[in-house]
Image (cartoon, rainbow, N blue to C red; front, side, top):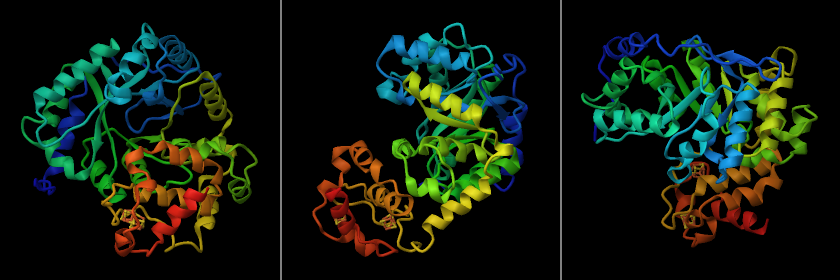
Length: 394
Ligand code: SF4
Ligand code: SF4
């Protein structure tokens, strides 16, 4: 197992190297359509990113629709598209390419590749070139180290590894900025951004998942761009919650509330929504354009309202600690415990059916054999099996 301890001279030795090799070419300003879109500072990059960005992981298997959708998004002022070759069974960037044709000047297309102990400089560099070829681009304004966590830092730093590939790609003008995305505890992501290696981070952030709030705050202090993904919590916030509307005193659909919440946080640069239809695109663009954070409900007030909703249930809620995992029957226990939390605290009972349907059958609670092992390991003594019964009844 590789050590996660970094050299004591780490930030100076590595961070400075990364930030001083940014090439000047391909540095045209980003597009700005101020009659339909709002823009925000993208950390210290000098770029102004659209407050709404386009996650391409939900594009449909319909070339004509995707082409028009992406072209329309650019026409409406969206200038950040998040992608990787690996989404949608390896077809994501192929689905995007026709819509981008002739329209990529002043638009950030972000590519992404993961790493493990065996990933070499050659492999990572070749993947950057591969994704550029698929998309028909000369360069990435942003490239993400994907599926990252603090434990993978040694794989990034090793000689002849990913960092060397990123530096070479920067020197050759194939990428301009480097970000990362993944899942880890907020403290570890703070350690990642404090290395000085990255210009941005992409993390899930929404009304019912605020775990990365401290990381986002630190990113703001350090001048990193923040891409907030999953603003509607994978669809859970697509259903109206009367309880939430009342507690937050916001008389509007939950989807709209969700986007407003993300953008009310001044440290968020852009709210990245996975979009697949014109209806979603136009609705999101309208929501973002109509939301003026200066003259609306403040982020702190929204957080207070949300805190109030979980008050009194602390210690009785799933904290996503995952101590109950792995389950011998492969049940994704925290996923289902969180669905129950969203019902109890946030009144999101209408989203249950869809949330349950979204998980792979081999991870479903219906595979539970009632062994009770998870309950013995849960620090909050949560009634996992009884919760599954309640969900089944719903
Ligand atoms: S009770 Fe069910 S969910 Fe819990 S460990 Fe056993 S099989 Fe898994
Ligand atoms: S151990 Fe308990 S609190 Fe932790 S993820 Fe599992 S159910 Fe949730």
